[in-house]
Length: 97
Image 1 (tube, rainbow, N blue to C red):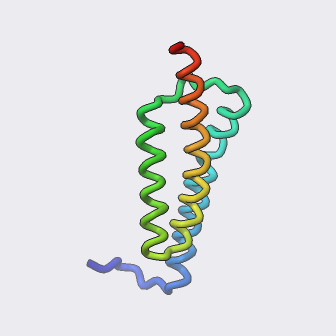
Image 2: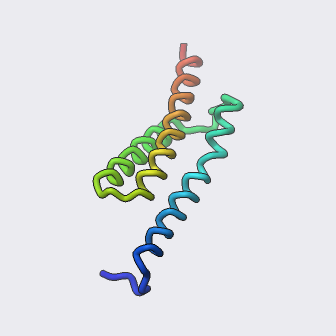
C-alpha cells in the first residue's frame, strides 16, 4: 500500500522529526511536575510501567531500523518515563512499609 501523497524523502523525515519533537515535548510538563512536587498519587504505576517498556521497545526498534527520529525521541522519552517510574516506585514503597 502506498500513501497517496508524493512526498520527497526529506519531507518524510521532517514529518518524523516533527512528530518525535511534539510527542516528546508533550511529555515534559508531567515529568517536571513529578520531579518538583514528588506528588505521584495521580500516576498509575501499571500504566507507567507499560508505557516505559513500550517506549524502550520503540527505541530498540528505531535502533534496529536506524531511524533517527525514532531513536532521538524515544531515547529522551524513555529517560523521562523511567525517571517518573522510579519516583513512583520509591513513592509507593515508602507508603507500603
